[in-house]
Image 1 (cartoon, one colour):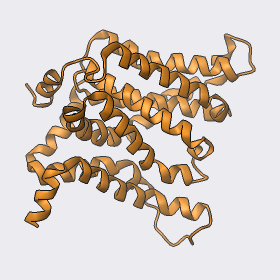
Image 2: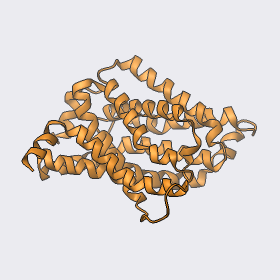
Image 3: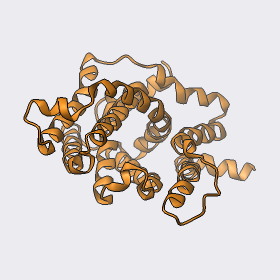
Image 4: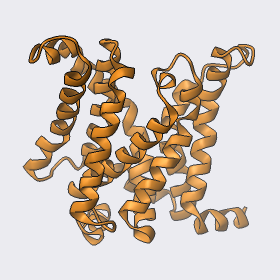
Length: 276
């Protein structure tokens, strides 16, 4: 047991990713294989385990490497909702721009009616809140646990690209599941989108001094916009526009800040994480 604990302490992110994949795939993969008719329907429905896998893995690895007291550090950034007023506009504003571009590119309705036709606005708040509840468990793991450790060694850009690619692997059961809207999308575009999203999420994380509130909101807004596309039967046709918008935004972030830190210094973020 001591040997295992020593290995986890030496490679915490590797063990976090491995445990996340085991947990999430255990939740998602049986359903995907059953939906494709590749295995009989003999496994219990554990789909909820897929979404909470990163948080469970982060809590487990943190407890092993730093003790139980460190677990609270993972959840503390969920209480940090203060940031520059600019971020209160940037976080929803970017996705409203993406939604507008997607609607303008593929909707047959005349502009400006496109946004009204394309978006089921009364349902958008419901989608957003539901996505926040689902996505917060991901962000506790990916941005709350993995990103600070990777970025300290590699810098923000390389850490973000790595997390985006790992995120693609993590989503594979959903890409294989015909019941998931993600299964309708080209895999190369999905990989580009997830890497671009990882860069933008790191940018939000740095700019809000490590707040998982803003990070979760940004992530949830992306899913709410996607649900709007699905609702209007424009999910597949508008996806290249979304990927292009996210990719260009990510490139602009890197050009603006460089590859090492996207905004706030690492020292500033660490001081917030330590509760100072």
